[in-house]
Length: 290
Image (cartoon, rainbow, N blue to C red; front, side):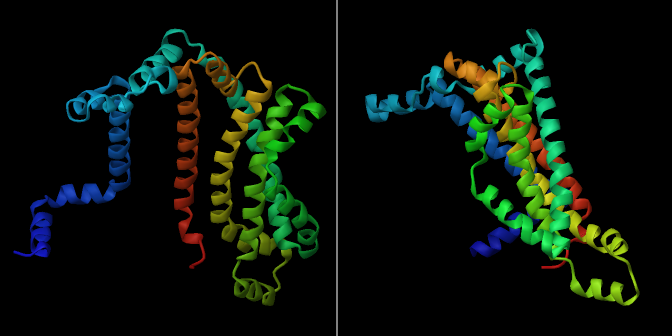
């Protein structure tokens, strides 16, 4: 029997309902499976499972598969530390509130500035010529390099963190908005012009609906870059916040706390990006065909 026939029989052996469920949830199933395998492998490295299993075969060389918790911790230790910080001492909540306030202010300001600026630059040719050198220059320059100047300008308070988050998030939003206007179907604009549509009517009924998917794609990028801004801003100049907590814990070799802070930022960023992705799927029908 050929391999192709065996594959066909295996597919027919799977119940149709189970197969449909897997197809509908394939992304979640595969992602969860790989994550669990990675965590088991990591826990085995810290607990010495793999070193003990291979020691009879390779001798002392198996000890290279054993890692010390002080350097990289372990999933179980991180989970225990997260439970303590969230539900026993509650020490992480004040850091979360402060970082969330910075994030909301910085990202909100980036949206408020980046979207109108990008849309206007894409619609008005002369404005595009005026702002493109600045957008290109800031996009090519690591905004983190400007952090010492920001500290000199506005000090070490909340404004510095909000400013670095704003600078990191505004560029993908503005560039995506500018590109969105330029990808609008010119035939639609010509038809609307032929019927005497005003610029405001064109912008409201054609430009904005066409730009929404691209705006959301830029926002998804900005969500992740704003998370970077939180950590960088707080590590260099803050006594409170998730980034500051990561910095303090690293200096004390408290790797469990470091990983708790990193996971909080990673999970929050993933959830926000997924939220934007779900909104993006709702407007997928507006995206021009490629």
